[in-house]
Amino acid sequence: MLKIFAAFVKKEVFHILRDTRTLIILFGMPIALVLIFGYTITNEFKGASMAVYDEAKDELSQDLIAHITASGHFELITLSENIEALDAAFKAGDAKIGLVIPAGFEQDFYKEKQTALQLITDATEPNYAATLTNYASQMIRAFQQEKGEVADMPYQIDLEMRMFYNPKLVGAYTFVPGVVALILMLICAMMTSLTIAKEKEMGTMDLLLASPLPPILIILGKVTPYSILSFLSALVVFAMGYFIFEVPILGSLPLLLGLCLLYLFVALALGVLISTKAQSQQTAMIISMFALMLPTMLLSGFIFPIESMPEILQFITKIIPAKYFIIIEKAIMLKGAGLESIWQQTLVLMLMVFVLLMAAWKNFKVIYK
Image (cartoon, rainbow, N blue to C red; front, side, top):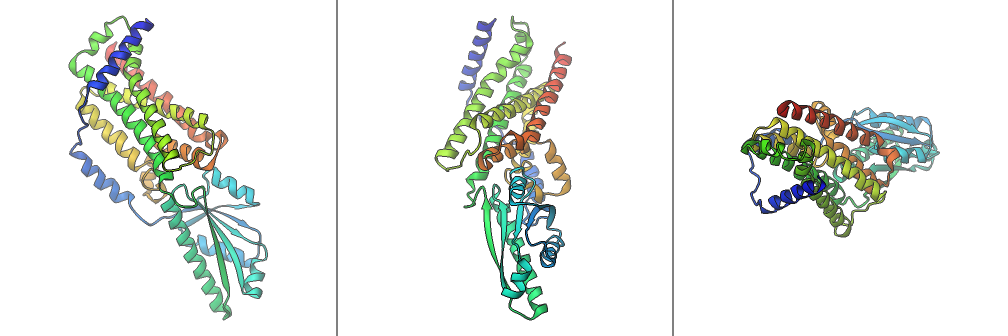
């Protein structure tokens, strides 16, 4: 049985190598792009999560925090008791921007006429980090002018800014994780759905089911070449990001590759599920384009920050597997985080694998029982 399965996989590999057809861009793609881009492209943001470490705990520091959060652009999630708690909030992804207010803030402001604050941003998303920093800086300067006019004295606040995880705002730190998620989804899920739909469309699936191989091994034989190809493509992208673009991998490489396989299983399950619903390659392609490619590109946080999207789109992103995998990649590669910081995203992907496989198996049994 193992030799038969190996021969079946070998045949599928040869078939892939001989197939040089390009993917067809459907007429519906421009419409979808216009709609989704129209809702997602924006420089405005609201409710960005902010953590504050207030060493001063005086009246002026409280006024400053209230001034920043009153605009609605920032949402205070925590007042950290120490700098370690602030760092933990960033590593867990709970905070996008942090403010450190030193001890003696009010005294230095009024008596010394000069003091300093520190803004910290999560620069795994460089454009978003720069936007948050600019907004916060403007609001602090407005607060300074307001207090200076009241007291009629030239008080000054010096800002010290730090960019966590991506201090140089290198764009490759963002697009490498997103490209890996996109490649795994497209090659693995889309091509899996197309190849199984092709067998159904040509009427050869019934012949395959009549072969000595059981149905589950036939499906595995179909998806194995694409899963291997997808994983190798992901390794190439990781290697290019590391050696060419100097994207670091600060965390555990085995953990990163293991969760990469988990995401690959999600893509495989999606591809098999689509193939059970599609009766032709054209149908499988349409479903893949609108259900996989576009959401992975536009609603996963790959290109546009999720926080900038309308609430309904933010809700839809909760069912996009790439969203969770990109968070995992950035946490391991850029933050050096371990499983304790990304267990929730990992659990969601595991749940997706189970649900999608059960749905695909149920549909397959209904069709070919």
